[in-house]
Image (cartoon, rainbow, N blue to C red; front, side, top):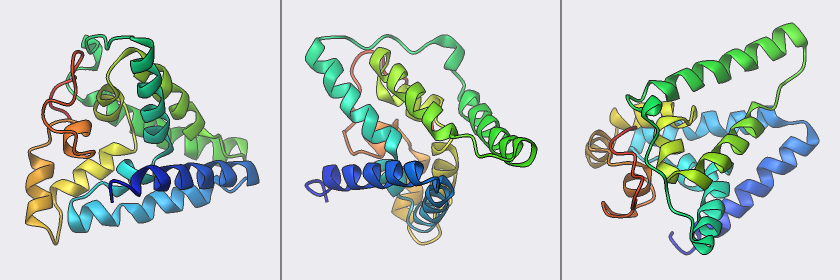
Length: 184
């Protein structure tokens, strides 16, 4: 799976931009909603790991940041507590509903989150966005904690050690300076 993961990420990113270009971003939402079955059943956040365009972009930004020698800043204090990700989920749902019902047009909120993810990753460890900001990771993480078919998946989700270690399998030492700490 590790050898196939980069290719799968690129394929999903291409699919995301294809659907966006064709005006079918609601199909991407369907992909995301279908992906919620994996954490619910097996405790694995496959969408976050392989399909999420933000994660793919953030991996690229992290590589560029490493090549430039830039260091991760400490996590901003206003992001502590984990409530911001819930607020960003509420904001995303509200924008979706308002843009559809009031304006009559879908606002591409995912593009806003792509930009936010890239900017935050340039300054902080990617786990800051994944664990403290990302609205799409909130349902994934919550469902993984109650995994129906995998005790191991439930246990791993309950002992969450940050996105890099827990989802990408980077190990407990993977996030260097600027590590956001436990979140989820």
